[in-house]
Image (cartoon, rainbow, N blue to C red; front, side, top):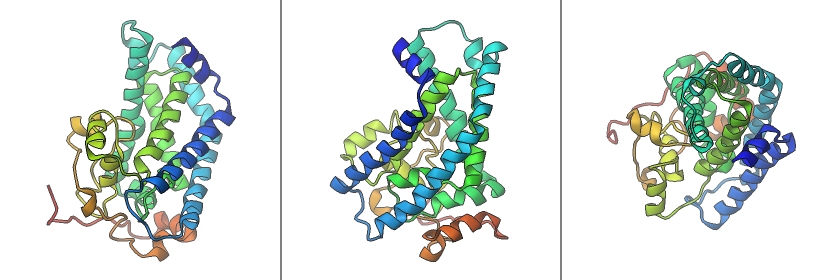
Length: 281
């Protein structure tokens, strides 16, 4: 455990970049071997758009990283945050608890707030417009959303009181899990269902990308599935019924052109997915 702490305390930027690039490459190859859906699309064009948003996310996080560092140092010096107030515990338990709480604030909470707040939905909508969900979709976030998510991650650090090494561990795991549960891969149903009791599995997250509510407003988790189950936002839908995208932006001219995607948040009316009364559960 000490070696893991030391590694994430001093993790080089090149290693963090390798986690992002290596994850995309690994799951992209896996998609070719065992795809969930056989898409008819220009995969490199699609990936190019999503990789552009990946780079903008990296840039936003790079320039704002000092805020995370200062926040983590402040919680440590002032003995502030949930982890700081708890009695001493084994380091493995401390790490799991920290990851769970960071995932709650930095992933689940921000995600549900983005869906329930019209202004924030304008930015998050870009992620949902993708009609060909694959591993490159994981970081398809408008630069504005990247800032929003960074704010919630910082809030998580302050509330939880996490050291910086645990923040780096959380961010690394978050990237890999997001690439995993967005990947266009088909796991055996029993395995996927078993995984979904602990972590967000591919089948579980794909339900969130169904084009109409109430499924669009479900399965918000990124790493751990416990929060969706605990707060009643967990839903199941067979993959045969899933249609990707948002019903307000099904035209490729809207969701498959970079310029159009960048402009979506600044249009007059935010697009809200309709409720499918026939499939509501």
